[in-house]
Length: 509
Image 1 (cartoon, rainbow, N blue to C red):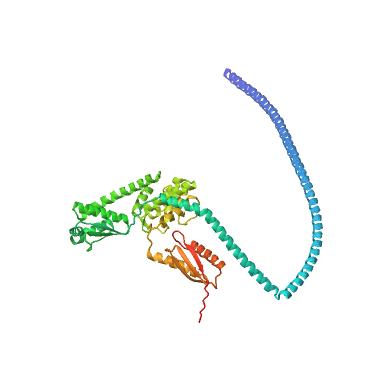
Image 2: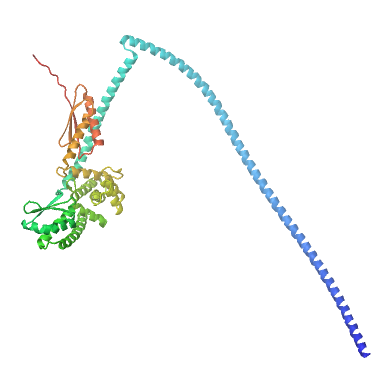
């Protein structure tokens, strides 16, 4: 029984506990729901407040954009009104000018009509006068006009030739004196020896026995020497002499010096020949470099590239028209310095350009370029200045002259080449130039004969007196000189003399 009671008590306690827990859970859930409702209400109110604020903000922004748009519209409207006002003013101005133009046009039409009537009256009067003059002079208007035009043309041509002659003579009086003074002073102050180089050098020997040793067994020595030097060695019946033939003077000099050393040493065989030629070539290269350096020092030219200096030294073994190139370049450099000093220009720059003006003749290779352009490119490669480059390239009119030094170099080059005895011309070229001079003069109408005299420096032109008048002879002389100047190449200057002679011959029988 006790156990049953205890069990019942336990079951009752458990039930009470469960009832209490249910009551607690129910009250707790009601409290959570109530809090959730309160929180939801707060969130709703907050969201409503935020929505209201956002609406107010958007409303304010919208109103602001509307105000800005209205402001812009007002500004555009003001601007359009101003433009409209300006256009109205311009339109009024145009209308006013149009009225003035119409008025001027009407006035012009009236004046033009009056002028036309007056012109008609003048034409009638002129026709009447022309008819009366034609009747008096027995000449038609066309014939009279033709005679007048001929007379006026002849008068104008005579006056023009007279004016040209006066201007030319005046220019000669003013310019020739000073120019001649500068040129003569330059020539007098430069006096250098002139070396004439040939394509042949003669090597003298003591006896003809040496010839056999130079030739060698079966010609081995002479073949080895020719192969090493590139020079043709001629051993003939000429007593005590061996001829070295080559267009390159440097090769001839190497061959000559090598022969001299071989003959002095006495040991002549192919191996020894190659050794001596190589040693001589090295010594000559050093001598060329020293010659270039010494030349620059003598002329007072500084800062020249070593390769250009070497090319200057090679000029010693180059010739142009029979004139030694180094002597010619030194001569031109000194002449340029003197002329530049007389004219107040840069003396050092002129001397530098004068020394380097023919540098394009030095390279062994022969490109398809004029030596002036080649020399300009070489000087540009080694850092020469623009004035020097233009003087080198323009001294034969290959390019346009852009500096004052360029014509000085051209003139000094011509002076050095035109000096008597400076150059040797090929006979064929000389004869061709003489014939071209004479043929040029014979191409003009009325020329009976032409003779080039004074080695092509003067042209005597004989004209027929019946076909060429005195005025025409002056014009003919001027035209021939201009054609020679523009179409031909010649040293110095060419004097053109036109001779007109009228002979009256009768026979007494």
